[in-house]
Amino acid sequence: MNLHEYQGKELLSSFGVRIQRGIVAQSADEAVSAAKQLTEETGTGWHVIKAQVHAGGRGKGGGVKLAKNLDEVKELAGQIIGMNLVTPQTSAEGKKVHQVLIAEDVYYPGDNEPEEYYMSVLLNRANGRNMIMYSTEGGMDIEQVAEETPHLIFTEEIDPALGLLPFQARRVAFNLGLSGTAFKEMTKFVSALYMAYVKSDASLFEINPVLKTSDDKIMAVDSKVTLDGNALFRHKDLAALRDKREENPIEVEAGELGLNYVDLDGNVGCMVNGAGLAMATMDLIKQAGGEPANFLDVGGTADAARVEAAFNIILKDPNVKAILINIFGGIVRCDRVAQGVIDAYKNIGDISVPIIVRLQGTNADIAKELIDNSGLDVLSATEFQEAADKVQEVLS
Image (cartoon, rainbow, N blue to C red):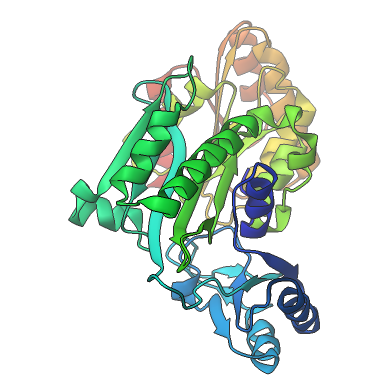
């Protein structure tokens, strides 16, 4: 589950990470009130207006602006709120901005020049250890840094039995070229950031940039936080931060129905039980010359109600030209699934796309007979290759 920048910063702050302070606003008038409050609390004269959407590269799309007075705060916030923000990480339609973060200006003059760094905490899946990735090249796309100057990216891997050790936090500060007050500030920042990552059961914390201010303070100017959805039952407070407006509406609806669904860009809808079989089915579709339109796992209880719900979800995608139902009857009986397909087909009414049904396992022969004798426009198959051939036929 992704968090907005302001939510991620609040989470970081609760663990002692210094952040760029800000107040979220949902209208231009609220933005002005937030700016006035920030001025009173922090003394900041300029304010940064940041669109709050689940996508990076907001500045490139016009979603981050600097306001030098309250009139500009109102004007810029009014422009950003309600816009469809297009960034390198959104679709061509972009994402609608419902709210903005009014943040303090932290690039104030001082004895030293401000410096920006990149830092993230994530799991290194190659060895099963958490890893801190960091670079002196803050404010840039880390992918670009990795491609053009890979020697400027450092990593610190953490032994899960020991956690982050003090010398590792110091090494991060040393590799970033810090000394004195900034060195001490960075070691505190790294330790607090890692604690926030572990205690919140996150899968990613990305801070770009981490800023060394002109008076050597270290703070998070941005935050990208992804929480492990499988651990949210332990964090009811964090689960409540979910913003469904930022998610695919079909995926949200499928989740509420208890279906494991991921929207894809293809033309063949998939209805499968079991993640492994779903992946194999997607490969089968590609081999047949099609492209999977979705990943949909109906689980082990593929009864009529779940099958009908799955049909309705798949048919919401206008790009679907055919539907392949591939069910292995282990715990669930194939004849019950077949009857569920028939009942769902009749309840939905006219389904304009061809349907191929492959049922294998317990009572598969009875299931095939039910499908064949149903009088519905449904093609049955018993073997993987047979199903692939039928997919190819209906697409050609």
